Length: 188
Image 1 (spheres, rainbow, N blue to C red):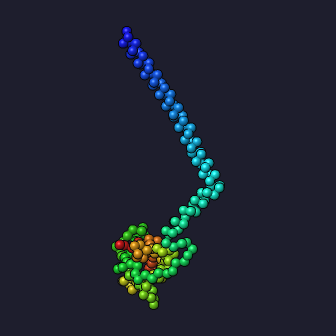
Image 2 (image 1 turned 180 degrees about the vertical axis):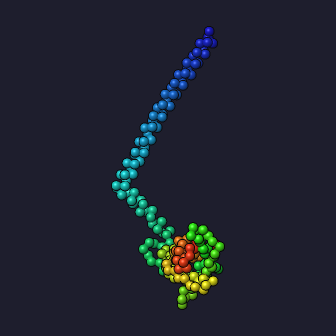
Image 3 (image 1 turned 60 degrees about the vertical axis):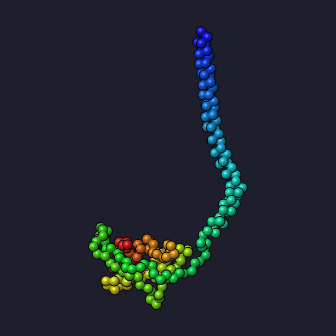
């Protein structure tokens, strides 16, 4: 009989402990549900108070000089022109497109040609690494016709100036209009 009473006491004791643990878990969960929104609201109120006091603006202004030092050219400061010997080495090939904008077997081949009375291209720089070519010329190898393009966007990659994708679209569109054909992007 004593063994049975011991088993019952043990079971009752374990049951009481489990009930207390469950009760504590409910309070912890309730505490978290109340504390998290209070922390978020407190942070928001603190941010608003600091913003109105000007502290946030002051901190942002303190961080800006470091970022401004990294910039190669400050905004508003004019950048001088750059001279470029060549933008595209070798032949430039444009595929001709049909009315459905599908590539045909015709390929128009061009080469760069320097502007009249010049031995370099002049890049009117907007920043240290971007700008526009004032006068870009292409010479058609087959017909010996010369086509001129103004303000062609270029960028510097790895120290060398190259025509941007936007620039090639502009050249392709103007060249196609002058030749009265549809041209695609230049082939590699």
